[in-house]
Amino acid sequence: MDKINQGGLSMNSQAQLTTIKTFAKSKLAADKTGHNFDHIQRVVKLANRLAKAQTKPVDLTVILAAAYLHDTIDDKLVASPKQAVNEVKELLTSLAFSSAQSDEIIHIITHMSYASNLNEKQVLSLEGQIVQDADWLDAIGAIGITRAIYYGGAHGEKIYDPEILPRTQLDKASYRNLADETIINHFYEKLFKLADMLNTPQARALAASRQQVMKDFVATFKAEWDAEA
Ligand code: ADP
Ligand code: NI
Image (cartoon, rainbow, N blue to C red; front, side):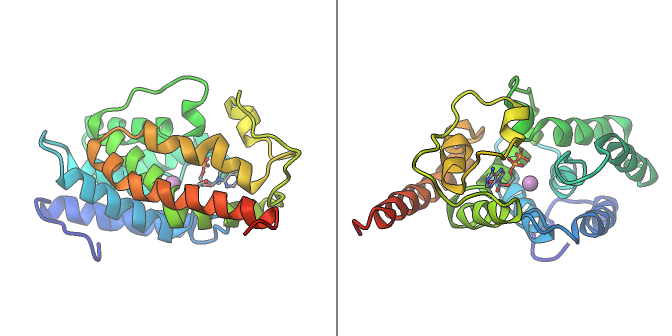
């Protein structure tokens, strides 16, 4: 694990996380939609930072393992999420995680996504809330703008169309239906909402300037579109 402070982790945890990191890297190496291993490294770093800021005790190994693994089972990235979850379970067992830790990691990575929270809000432990916050922080701000454009380009979305209004009633199926999606509408359908959905005060504090960057970006974009800027 480079670049993150491993303070407090046992040698065994560090060894487990090194293997998990290699596994996640190999699974996401080919991604061209903004979920590659750079995204994972940023989420791990943010999760580590948020974990260190907690006053309640948290299981840092569970947090970092879930941060590394969270996109390896995503239904938009893998052909068979069920098979991918089984593979992660086998990995955790082979690394001698306790069944409680393994169950917790699997619960976090299968319940934390924005998409899986659209139909009903999922209950997460503090460890899960931290990983979700880290993932959502990486979806907003300057990085978030870039990822939305990258994802939209990869899926052939229009950049903007003033005739297409942002959708307000979104369930998971409609969220994933990109037929009438535009990159600018994605800010209204998801990105502007995330700051208020964050769990920890530390993540909310980090989100404030990221939110402003996005608001300024969309406002300037529209002004330029209308030849007003
Ligand atoms: P989650 O895994 O939490 O459900 P998503 O798959 O919605 O997250 O989003 C992951 C990344 O892809 C984010 O950075 C997000 O902004 C981007 N993204 C998702 N859907 C769209 C979209 N329709 N247009 C542009 N970017 C998108
Ligand atoms: Ni992610």
